[in-house]
Image 1 (tube, rainbow, N blue to C red):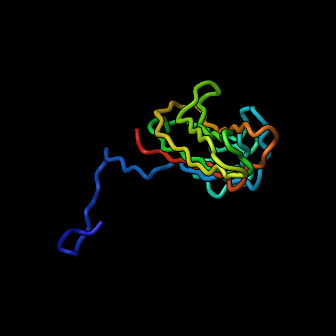
Image 2 (cartoon, one colour):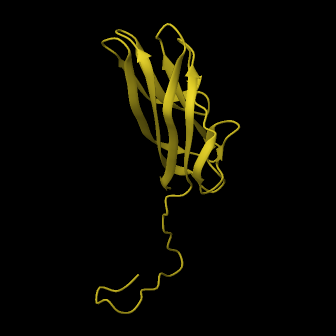
Image 3 (tube, helix red, strand yellow):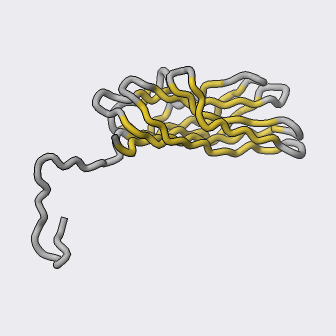
Length: 157
């Protein structure tokens, strides 16, 4: 840190905590099949970054690490082609396999539409809590979700 005069340094003393927005992660997946009229946990096998090794590519969840409880921002995105008039796509976040947050449902009009949606939420989480991304569609048959990602970072205590 440089002083306002442009010279010299400022020393930060003990007891000062700087937030660096970690842990943070971003995971992606190419395509994923979504069954008709069934909630599907989204799978992410490619991790772009994971500062605290808190995202698992075997359970597809982000778990709050020891000492990192607090407020987090999460975001997930997908596209579901092949949704027709009156049908819908849905995307949401789920915490501890029980509570769903920011459920985004969009009914389509017209034939062969593409459901494109971002779902985001700020959550206050404890150590050991975990967050997963889910999708749903009711087109009458399986559909393939594309351009999928899941990311998040700690905002602060």
